[in-house]
Image: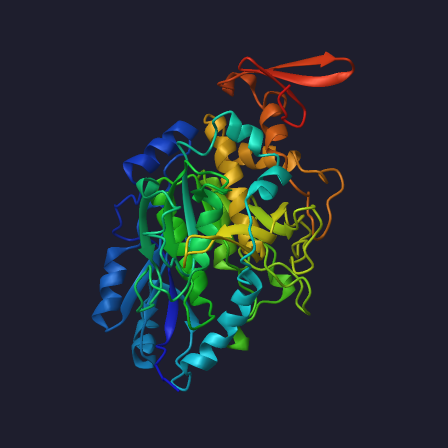
Amino acid sequence: MEMFTLLTIFFLQFADKAGSDVVCLSPTAIEMREKRGIAIDSLDYAVSPVYLDSIKSLGAKVLHTSRWMNGATIEASSETIEAIRQYSFVDMIYTTRLTNDSFGIHSVSLRKRVAVTNDNMLDTKPLNSNGQLQLMNLTPLHEEGYKGQGIRIGVADGGFYHADSLASLPREQWLGYADLTDCQHDFFSQEGNHGTLCLSAIVGKKNNYQGTATQAKYFLFRTEEHYTESPKEIDNWVAAIEMADSLGLHIVSTSLGYSTFDDEQFNFAYSDMDGQISRGAQAAAIAARKGMLLVTAMGNDGARAWHYLSTPADADSILGVGAVNREGQIANFSSYGPTADGRTKPEVCAVGEGTALINPANNEVIESNGTSFACPLIAGMAACLWSALPEVSNMEIREMIIRSCDRYDQPHEQYGYGIPNAWEAYTSATTDLHSTKRPTPYTKIIHNGQLYILHKGKTYNILGIKR
């Protein structure tokens, strides 16, 4: 069995940001903030460079920092950590991955393989994407020309095999990528394809397939460690979300979640799923305040002893996504809500059982299961709405989507508010929000007792079907 060493990883939380004068926002992000009226505050400043230099001087390796949590993820020996404890500027030290020289690749990766099996049960029968678009009634928005143009989406995941070369992915819309893990493999290697599958659900396009937002621009983040399951991965994800904010991304789709780990001492309890405990949930709520819309998979534990949601899907002000089949029936594996503090989860559902995706190995359309694949469908739908209504905020887009759901008045512990209706969300916008924000107004008429929409010279029924 091949052996390798896992170094001990810690998260340090600092007392303040002494000596920091760097605002971690790109010109694009600053422009977005100004447009939304979101002020720059202390969370936008980098962590103290003085503190980082002091930690490095003791021999610790800084892997990445968090300006929102005001801390750093470091690699250090036990002796170095004891020395770091003496610094008065270090408020807290959390162990996020323990040293364990006995781990072999087979034993460590087993947990990942089991988790991925739920998401990657691939089928090769002839398929297309029509059903998953129609269930959300997204096709009418596409026909109107709203396919995510002008929207920047981040995809945070574990592996992006062939994402740089797959013919069905639009390379001209690719903004870049970042690796927040300590994986040694090339970002686009065969080590994992989960992220590429999720990306295809958003921007993938070929003759028998169309993603939910084929004209959106996208940025890729690798946050999932391939061989381990540890709290360090949550801090990887937080770093990615902060980077997404710095880049000025509108939406981040996350098909990852955490509840239990290789080392059971780190496991969360259901009572921890309240949007307040994990740094991931805390960061997700901050991202919402900063103007981003986070869309997160609920998890695939619905048929297990732990059948609840995982973090960061427990966060407030995001969209947690459950899975249904193409007939709108809940998938038995889709994790349950509510959160520990009683909030409805998931917020929405999309096709996650029998989802059509593009296989990174051969560019063919295949079928797979998992809330992982329902999540990017919703992220793309949100991008289309935001493309159609560019003046609205992230929270207004979120509210439109939730209010359009088929169970909005009677939320359920697995369906949440249900399946959203993209066309209804769009055409109801002038009722729910200020009409001055609508770039393309419409008119409602009653004909022979039926409600119709007059929009841009065309007539639609309430389902978005042209007359």
